[in-house]
Length: 445
Image (cartoon, rainbow, N blue to C red; front, side):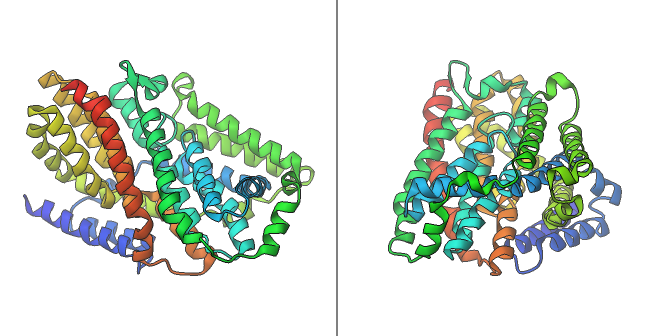
């Protein structure tokens, strides 16, 4: 390993360690890390800028603006009351139901956006019932990050797989005569949610007191009463659906997703500003004030940091070291790829890691003649599921943590954080691997 690679790796590990530790502001830590990488000669300032996927940043910014409008329509409160009525006084069931709803929405919407849309739902109820929001929002984030890979539209990794392999939307449901991502991840998530409900959430809320008067107040009224301004709600929902629909048709439209998302946001903002009095909507200044700028900045620095270690060849070194094992024995190689990926993406933002390995698998399949699909799916599932371990692996967890700490005015300790993420990752990875082994790995051996 060359000196510049050692320098990049040590700097990266220190910065990621500080991000996971969380004692310093994570966005500030990221900025310091990028500055150090430039100062030490790992990358230039222009390279640091170019390593950022600005298309993704554009998507996040635009959809966050739309999601902020959505949070003010009253629909989140409507959903909260509906689920609360359905679950009765079973708080653990309410927690799981909200997580399931968020998780299935995330198949079509970026997981960070799902959190920003659904967090107001959780907060409305937890504040009324005087319950901490963290258990609810962290489960929401874990599930949303998890299910984003079930279909093509939900997250960046499946979109990268489409770019490298040419896979289309229907093949995420059924491919090569067998169930693929949608079915395997849905079964995995449903089983995981059920196990966590039985062995964690039910025990956690058994006999736990909450504000009964507030519960009666929340559930006694018609849920639809929370949508007080129906014109505003209809415009926001229509704008959101139109934007997502246009993004889902990107291959026919021929435009970048970021441009489509920004265009949808601009149209919605213009409508809101032009018909401000008629719609009685919040101003753009109010919406911008609620945007999580720290999270946006954190993503920018994370792209630069990962780009730096990729630039000096560290990620490629790991891929090259694994290539002989993968080519020699498909069961051993795919299993090794799956289980090695999990701890790596727990500390490395998983998108860059997955992209490098997608190209490695494509080239490996070309030279050896093996089917790439057991490897593609194993990488995609392990890379997404394993990223749920820390905030460095999954930006969705970072956003969730920020919301909880801000709204509850508390600092979430590492021990409490890991008490949710470690069991979730462990259960999902075991179930998913068993399904992948029998459906995708052994048949191709």
